[in-house]
Amino acid sequence: MKGLPSRVTRGLTVGSRLVCDDNSGAKIVAIIGVIGTKGRHGSVPSAGVGDTVIVSVKKGTPQMRKKIERGVIVRQRREFRRPTGYRIMFEDNALVLIDDKGLPKGTEIKGAICREVAERFPKVAAIAAAVV
Image 1 (spheres, helix red, strand yellow):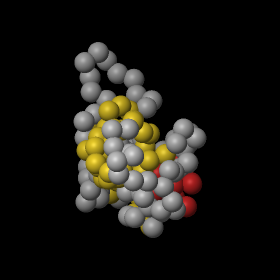
Image 2 (image 1 turned 180 degrees about the vertical axis):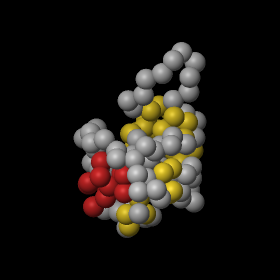
Image 3 (image 1 turned 30 degrees about the vertical axis):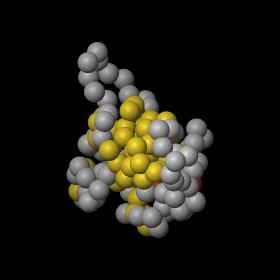
Image 4 (image 1 turned 90 degrees about the horizontal axis):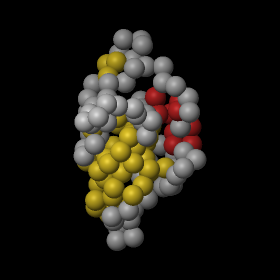
């Protein structure tokens, strides 16, 4: 997986609820784990834009509900800084479901995604409406 050029502030923790921004059938998901984090005993893992997380589908179609899926965070409300000096923040927390190879499960993404996600997951960026 490609590294990110900017240091993203991790604004989402385990238990955070996000909007699923693709047409895979899930509507609302909750983070239950963060892939690639190492931590101390008792610390709660956190994630930010471009991180891969394990989620549980809370609302959606009957086939998708109560399933454990993998996803990548494409937007977060918490402000983070790019190397150019810009500060980026979005109005919601959103995620796109992916498979084990990093390919998106849906065929379209409704909202904009962050440029950091587009660099790390090019197939997700190909189906996105806009890249910010």
